[in-house]
Image (tube, rainbow, N blue to C red; front, side, top):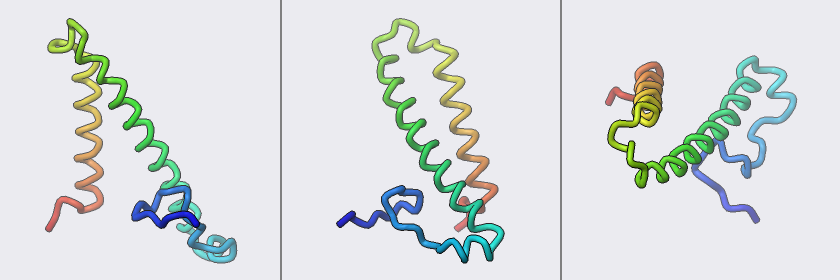
Length: 90
């Protein structure tokens, strides 16, 4: 038996909606696709984070424009999503 995860984008969970409910509701299919893309994005960001561990031994680490750019871009994206979805409000 597959353990249940708290992560709604987990691909191991059984489908929540039947084909009939996806056809009946215009947002369910888009929501399902979004959750799948969120899972892929999380995986890609985790891989990027692991890759940046190599930067620790690089002589250009302190002044590297690339790593600073990606850190800043990810931070801004998370901030924007947090504001758009109202997750920054108590």
